[in-house]
Length: 166
Ligand SMILES: [Zn+2]
Image 1 (cartoon, rainbow, N blue to C red):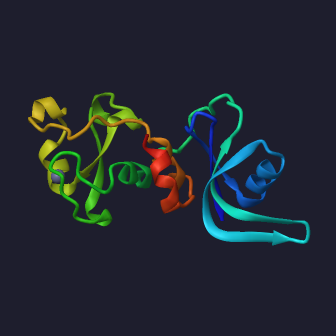
Image 2: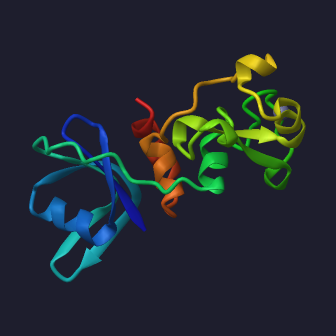
């Protein structure tokens, strides 16, 4: 059970353990934002189980979460959607395309890799999108916080969603 920790400004900061969230609440360093509706009980304490907490005082924003650039990470970021034609043929039918081809100096970076279906990858070949006349649906970038959580092996709780995309 993990808890989403927001900065005082409501920006998402970290995913922390339930134990740490309870400690922050008990120390009054954080306040409850969303609860599961269940109550946690110990001999000395009964508090609503937190799903989202918010720091009472602003903390320095964390450095961008480091997410290794893997095929799975690129597909997840692009929601398993071909960035050229919009096809969603399933994960095993998708490839990772170098926007600027590797043979022409294109790097393995968030901004140079996109998800492509096999047909689009073959049609584009060793060309840039401009040369191939194939437009990208959106410019590729680093994953946002809400994408970084599952990429790092965590799971997004539905109750977190309103806080991840603002
Ligand atoms: Zn395609």
